[in-house]
Image 1 (spheres, helix red, strand yellow):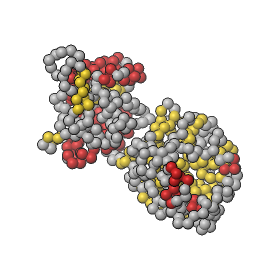
Image 2 (cartoon, rainbow, N blue to C red):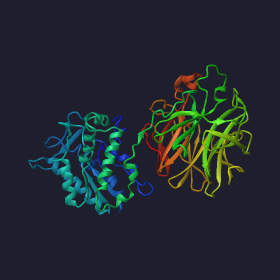
Image 3 (cartoon, rainbow, N blue to C red):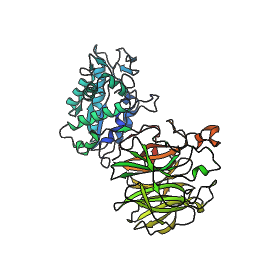
Image 4 (cartoon, one colour):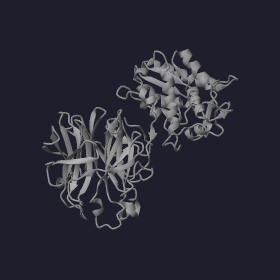
Length: 541
């Protein structure tokens, strides 16, 4: 719990300002530890209580929980007999002090300590372990040294911790020391103003909390810290993530780790969006499969080459690959349209190819499925140990069907898995003790969950509906892949950024073009949600 320097400021009119609390779980074994961030911008140690926020936090605290408390940025202010507000010069942060009784001294010392002691005692009474932190440093310097709260809030927070017998982390000094090592000029890039940090500044403060935590003796929380994450240099994913430089039509992404080259590959349908002359939807046909590669864990991508597929004629269409690794060999299940056509009415099939290098692909077989018009294979290991392929049977109102195989060669068809509404591009993944299926409903992405991969329940709201605010991300998300990595789930999807307003119905290179995007999925109360506007801090293992 704390103020805006702990809580993500987005959504409160603060622009690109971020607090460290929302990134705390990056540094823990997420199978064992969960983090709830109850901090809120503009709150002092007192108003967190008087506005009823503590009354919402306290009932949820149970034995064995850890409660991290950081206040101070909004606790100081001029002395008077009522509620006072004053702007800290150059920060945009408001401060407040309420005189509870006349002492003739610095009243904020009394009120700050009073509320911290109350939080500590009430949390301990419920069996929680409390850790008090000094406030994050502001971006103010004196003769090359970052100013600290050494004699004020850091000292007072430390005194409360000592008297109440709980650990103290001097976040103020730890982070200030790190910023000083960078220098004033570089530090300016980590702050939005005199107090609030950018995404990178929030991560630095978060790492400082972890550094302080690791120095505490007898703290059993330390055993769950992911030490490899402390030194890892995560990056912000590009926005948009990738735009194909040849056809400008990247869509239907699927990711896989290239073991030989030690890098991530992303396969995608490469529609011919910038074709000078088109007729109907022929620009969506005659398409190759592109490959992009990432050397930094998925934050940035560049075009590598087209997949070398020899199946079919030169005008054949390749759509929606899904690529897996099994037994030291890579397998691709690819949608084939036998030609380049101006409409959607032609037969499609799914074929099986194999590769040892993810670039050169050899045809193995045509997969015998439920009809002669099937697309969008999605492969996953089923609970029974068999490979399961979900796909779109276009002959049955674009319902999702499935088949199973023990060797990826011989397939047994089992019929319809989902048919409550039309959709395509099924992607199945396991996360949070459940199986999830993402389906493109052309109104954002539908989400289904199952405990056994037999009975699927649709959640009430689609994700990636409408549009976001980021570059090229103003339209609905389509045909996605999901990568679960270190228990974080990232969704890679495509958009048609030119299809906005009246232009959406026009056929131009701008309305045809598509770009790839990434967002992080979140899980709460049994359902998945996604804030596509939040920058993605990523380094896939």
